Image (tube, helix red, strand yellow):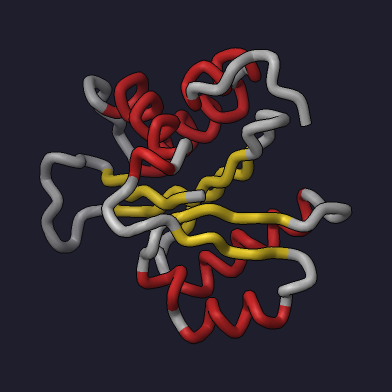
Length: 154
């Protein structure tokens, strides 16, 4: 899992411009993913995302692999994980190791395909295009992006 910023105009990252945050988690075995856009990137949004993952996979214990962002290490997140330790475990990656997080490759493809050379009129329009990208991503393309062999089985 990871979060990434979405700016209406990414080259003008100045205070006051429109900004939102894409939270994403992927299951490398099934290709299923949960991608959500929030207006903040804080502990409560991270915990909402974890709750939605648990709702999405009600019969599974979930290992969430992610970076050491402040929202992942906060007291609120620690309390949430402790309260749900029977359902979810957060596995932090070493600092400065985005190459170990497969979703970083997915973000790169998404940015290259949708964000680098296309101008959007509004932030909601941009977010809708991003969400459609994830909805339409085939399993074969997904595992290709993540660098997973096509013969992976659950």
